[in-house]
Structure formats: C-alpha cells, structure tokens
Length: 135
Image 1 (cartoon, rainbow, N blue to C red):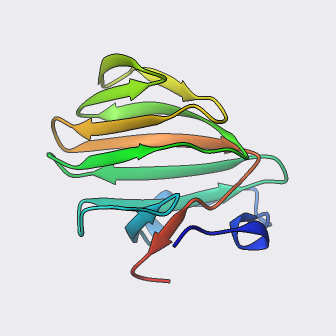
Image 2: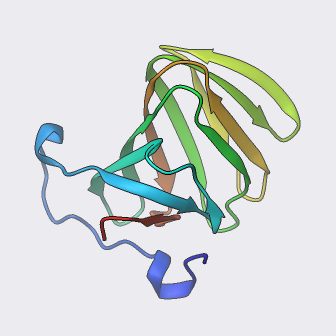
Image 3: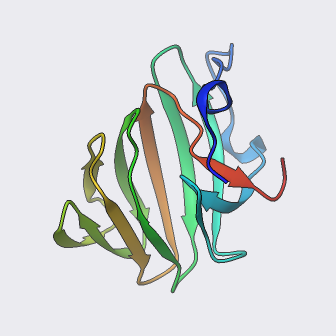
C-alpha cells in the first residue's frame, strides 16, 4: 500500500533542536508502496519544517531498495558511512562516505547497500514516503 494525500504530509516538529540519539528509528516495510526486505532499512525522522524534512536512514549490507520514484517532492542525500550502488534516472554511481546525490521529482531510482550504510536525506516539501512496522 502507498500512502496517499494527507497521509503523506508531515507536520512541523515544532522544535529548534533535537538530539538525534533520542529519536526512535522506525523499521521500514515499504517505500512508495514498494516492499522492502524486512529488517534491512530503518529511518529516523529527525526534524520537519514547513518546507523540509531531514531524516537519517540505516541500510544493512545487501539491502536493495527497489526501483521507485517520488512524484510530489525531491530529495538530496549525503552518505555518512558505507558504500552504496545507486541508479538514478538510468545512470549508475557508487557512493562512498562523503558523497551526495539528488532524486528529482518523478525520476526512477534504486540503491543497493554494498556495506552497512548511514545516510542523511532531506526531502522538500516534507513527505512521508514509507510504511513502518512500528507506527
């Protein structure tokens, strides 16, 4: 099932600061209606503003995020730890810690964690694209 309409819209956090270590990670079961491998992807929704969402994602080695696209927002990501194979709009890249990329609206993309990975992702406007086993 894919989140639709109002279910995708995230409300602002209402705080200026948050300790990331205190944010509970959600175990993700699907992104944009595409089922994820159980236990391989967790997300912390760190902060939400009027126009932006910042999240931290952990992807376990071997996790393949199937092809999907976002029609109502764009995302930029920064890899903190690990190595990841990316295919964005038909172009293939291998990202290492310190690399960044963009998922424009409507562009199909997928990734494969070549190692355990931690990434920061920023979405604008803020949209919830995932289903969770926890919430």
